[in-house]
Length: 164
Image 1 (spheres, rainbow, N blue to C red):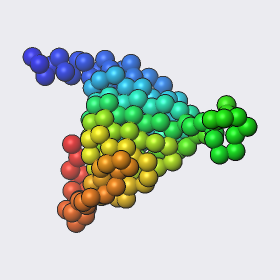
Image 2 (cartoon, rainbow, N blue to C red):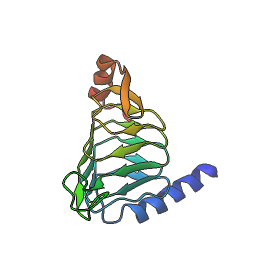
Image 3 (cartoon, one colour):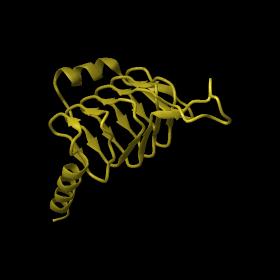
């Protein structure tokens, strides 16, 4: 019975939250999610709660999975050549790219201008402010790699289409 309730809840959240979003087949929202018009989702993406703010493009690849309370912020106030202090009214929009087969732990914050490489895993509570290489397991503030997946096994799973 609980499984049926979860499926119904996911169907409702997915219908509401993915409306108007460019996404491939099999995308699921298990909790409230907020996407922007500049968001593109691959296939088989599973969200447990994400909020995207800003006008920069956000591209999320195939087979993405996330924990709860994910934040992506990709628009920033201009301070470098501003006409006012501490910043002016000009906004700077930056792209975020999350490649295929990425897994984000709970409460991850991603800032604009970064790419998270294919197969990467981001530890819960991390702040992604710099690029993360493929197959890295990264964490911290800013998130930096502290381990790597076994790439040979990763590639075998990928070739055999072994996706959750």
